Image (cartoon, rainbow, N blue to C red; front, side, top):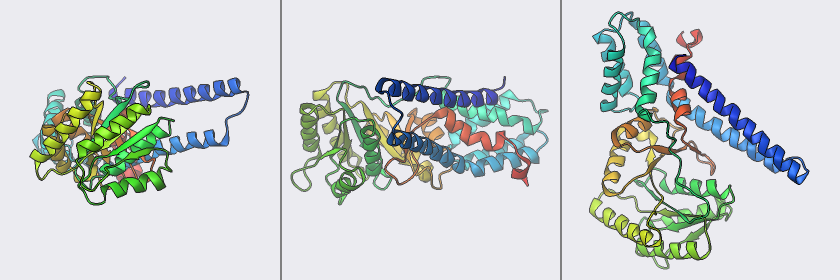
Length: 367
């Protein structure tokens, strides 16, 4: 069985298994409580399904031009010669994968095929190369480092305008919906309107399901806000503390000092914390987003990426580029403006959505 059929079977199997498990949980809960699922429970399941479908559609939309270009390329050339690979590289560059990854994919495909191979046979090789480069041969799933029974501390960083505060609020909602006790520390104390933005989210969009700690005065030292938040989180048995940090890259020295100071305070509470340092990247910025990741990674040990605006004009390849160049996995994907428009990143579904347009070739698509 080829790579593509294996990936399709895996996607189908995962969806079937998840559905069966959900039905088992609902059934067991109903037996224990001797009642049918409530309308609220049913609505919640439907909402989760719709959210996942929205994420899948967003990635597929971002890959639309890529699929069209690959199909045109495989029809244009009968043989995979130098001209074919030159044009393939141009197509890959347009996806925001980055030149390093483009050349790696192109060279790997050259080694796997002969000059006499038909051009339309390379599609599956390309799909497998994209998957292998992201996973690096590992089957490990990059989950968020959240554990029950402890105070989990997540720091969220990112350039202003990428959706950092919005993403943090969505993460808060994600865990609050799971009945976790969530606290937010408003440690981006110097950006005008940052605290007010968080207050707006907590009061009106999160329906006060989470709590907020902010400074007692304007432009308060961010580290002191973090300290107060840690004290409160520990004393009141919170499950998760989310720390909103400054997002200025204009002066990396000051940013590094701020982050280092916050790190030290967090470490005094728990040597393993912060359990996540999440960098928010706007997917529509392409290689600029990769450069941001590189710069932030120089001053902080970034553990995961939150890709925002995947429902916009993103071209799909940025997740591959960041993982390849910096070995930082994407952990969450933002696909809209609603409070629950955030999904865990699924590499199988991501690659499937990225390549299905040219793997499942339909005549009407090529007209």
